Image 1: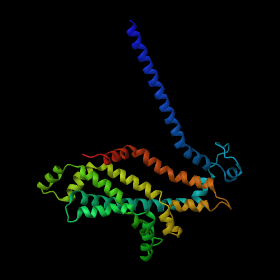
Image 2: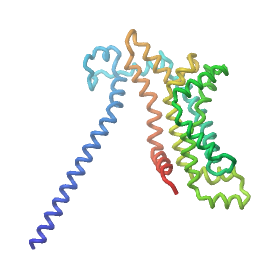
Image 3: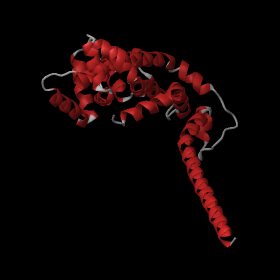
Image 4: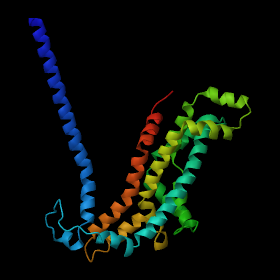
Length: 291
């Protein structure tokens, strides 16, 4: 009987320890979630404060009693953010489409085709990742300027249609597909392109979807290159629009209008991530495994 009581005490203590540890973990997760979500709350809150109210707050408040949508109206009328949205959409769609074609073909060549010096070329290709982006931007700027492609969609798009990282990621995924499938396809007189589209792309579709979504986010958030290569408002992207709003604050930064623009710009990306987050996780997980 004594031994039975001891076992009950041990079990009770184990349950208590488990509940305490679970409580601590959930408390930390809640704290971390609040830390992550607070900037979004602050951005949304600021976007519904009037310009005068925001500037009158010497100590920023965590609430507002007079929310307004005037900042959103200002962003889409005075600064023509809608036009910048359209430009960004064109830039994002075309760049992503061309980049996916280049990435798929390059990854297939490195993963399945045999040609002289393939390994050396791939190593040199990976070495490009070690070059700082600032140096690449300078080179791209000089090249685009010499080609008279400033203030054109072509000049915006061309430097972004290749990504060493995405090619490497997809090449590793293609390499995980068993060689027997490729050899069997060649026995059936299947062309390389047919094998690519009928076998590799369907098998690695999660990784391709991940690459597409990451590229969309990259293009949508692009700031330095569009600011550098365009000074004609006809080709401004949303990043240019935010900067224009920033400079329209009557001697001070128009922060509420900026936050309204940022909220408007962020909504499509948030919706995109919520829809495809499972596929993104599946693609990243597949890219990190071997065999």
